[in-house]
Length: 503
Image (cartoon, rainbow, N blue to C red):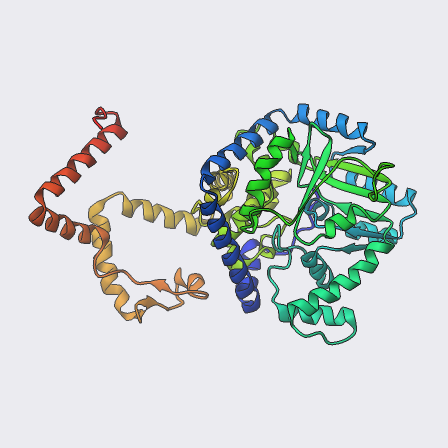
């Protein structure tokens, strides 16, 4: 995988993001809305967990037989007049794209949103060839004007608010535009309409490719991808090699899972199923269609027990919206094309030089929210633990961290030590606690309290409170207390294999 990595470590980039109030507020606001929308859509669906499992099984089966389904897709796509190319890496894909652009004597290209094209840095390559490349997704267009990369898989400009966007678009318009979303969108719509009509080539990504029909499927909400794939005479589609699904029936499952997980929508606004270039009976569509199937490190995961399930990802962005780390620092702090929990695993997995990306696995609380949000149940939290383990095994150890974990192990291995520590902590914290929080920026608290407050130790621990509750139950409701104890004993016996289940 070809990466133009951001400078500095993930910790240094995170500090920059945490000091940017505009970014933090914008990312927090939007991810909260998307996360709540997804939860509401899942609840309304009714049997969401069953569909998640269906989606997982489809992806597991497809990736396990990827060579078969890729071959079937290629055969059926070529039968419909599609030129199919295979690219081993980013450089290969760029070379193929440049050849097509030169053959067509292209002067301008319009693009719909494609994370694969971000992997290739195709805009830069086209620019060097003297070809104008214009992003037509509103978010992508905004960050192209800003000279930035996407901060989110599905909402590239999530880190910007309408005032910042108005400033960018005003420069492009040559006049001051108000921070009104309707007016700003109207300006972009008029501007891009000209670009659609002038373009020699349309470039798209590929949400899914259907093996049984040789079709590609595009999900979108703005209609720009449909314009990109119908108006220009030549279409180039970039497709990650894992984007295959076996049948049209499987598309129903993905069309249910992806929009609900991404934005909370029941259905995406536009879903285009494209089967080859324009035919004589068609009113529109490209005269020539190319699909470039990209490996770029993906095949490294095949057969790998730790990372093969990464190829199940359907790029919905739900894990980013659920992640407490991403929601504070945004996408650019991760340093690569893909951000959030999926990026923290995918980027080092796709790169052979994994040591260069070892630090981003630390940008996680390991809370498992990403797994709970994932519509195809990718165990990203387990993968992050494995990456951290691998880093330590390679000899990358922080002496202070090691000392801290050794101290933690010593403390937590003895209940009496824990009790003594808590008592000493309650006494020692008195000079630091203000309004129920510890706000001092000293020692280990310095980094944490730069952006939030540390909670103080409570007057009573959970264990102490539980003893009082248990005593109260024993005194007032002895039968209930005994029943609870009996149930707990049976549960513990089942877990340790020392007893039988009696209902």
